Length: 519
Picture 1 (tube, one colour):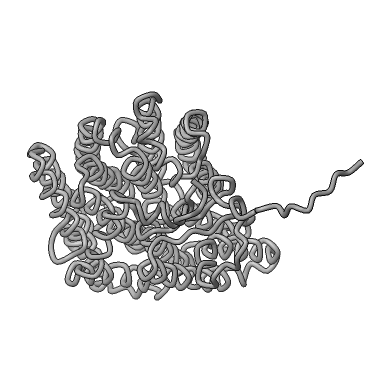
Picture 2 (tube, one colour):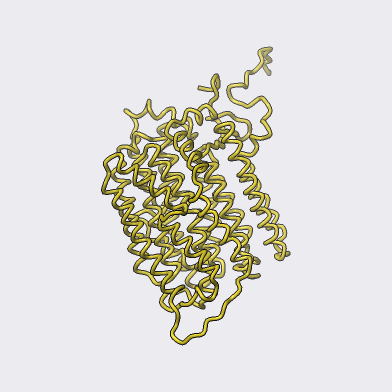
């Protein structure tokens, strides 16, 4: 017999009972938007002529959504949206602070540039086999990783972007692509497995996977739980994702194999997701363990920088050179995480955002150079400066930017990282940062002198007009890095606030667990 009671059930401790503000829907809209556009493209799989138009419009919409989200977070502070109205830690939370919003916006800008470039780089075969649905799925995974407030949810978004990246890598089914996909897939699956193992261990220790809940419980468990072991496994897993030494060899062995636009998007986005995850976990969740492991991380960063620039100096293939420069940049970001403090963390965030823009642009230049020169080897290609002066000028701007030279975006994070290293007495790390920058100047200078400035003796060079679809996104990225370099103050102020919010996450925690909420 059923028992009735007149006592009402109080759901306020477990469920959101009030309506969600319209602006707060921006937190999950980037992911939902990408899935919706991707689903539309799959439904229109027989009308591939519409795919580029829909995808580029969708990516432009993603940029607008992320820009509105950044403005909302900058004005209101961190924002949380919970799934199914279940309050944390019962439900999965999407929590966005300045760091996540900045990464999401720059990722969307890079993806839009890639979508426009793909108009000239992806043929009907690539469209037929799903380039644009895979691209939207990739951006759903990237956006979800930057916006989630749950560790297991972060793992899920890593899986989403990993699945889509497999599809993009193997698109075309050339033997070289399949070989690169195998190398890429194996190491990334190992990293993902480590991530999952660490996350299971984390849940066993904390009884929760919500990042804010972990951050507030960590201090009480520090004396009794193996947090150092947990942190070390996360460092290894995210280090593999980011292509840090000594598990970096998969990147230069695979990033030169797919279509140029795929290489560009991978270089701009995928390794930065690993760096973002490392920053989030090490700085916000386990700051004490980060301090204990700082020398190990600094050493890995220094070796990553050195291996990267030496690899770039040893290569002649344009895209292989850039692959090693991606690795070298990861070392600079690791140095910032190791140094810590506002300067180190801010420098790592700034360098990651700068690298997303510049490395994507440089891969575009590699594709255009191969189009103009008929080859991707700087040993055989020559005279590109005379074939298209505007393209050569844009390439030179990006070479200056990746080398950390003024007045481009790479100068400011390099200054921040060197100063932060010197402030804590890590002169050897500051020296390595400067040495890596100097060697990058040599590597990019060698590339420009051989492929662009050198002329074949007696060879006639005709000016070549480039399609707007390849030149326009390159020009936008190059001008963006110049604009940031000339007027860095707004971005610097936002990055300083983002770094402060990670180091002192009270606003983040209050967003997830408001005063008077579940304790």
